[in-house]
Length: 93
Image 1: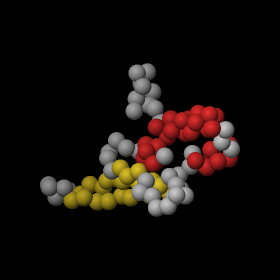
Image 2: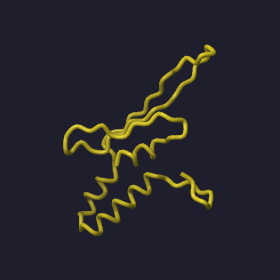
Image 3: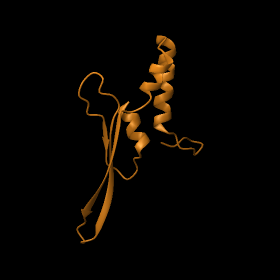
């Protein structure tokens, strides 16, 4: 995501800021807020794909689990050339 000023917005920074704002209204312990800002598991995969013309391209995919405190989790999953790990972390949050 890019602002009008041309500066890229980091979606993970936005998600973490939202946690801070909500924490102020709920009077949540700062240690718990810090825990909530971190992901439990980040998986990065690189997989080759044979293209129609016979060439090989390597793609990168991300899977992030924010928390499994309440049981099994599926997290955020993305495979796209314009996606980075911080975006998927924000989606998982």
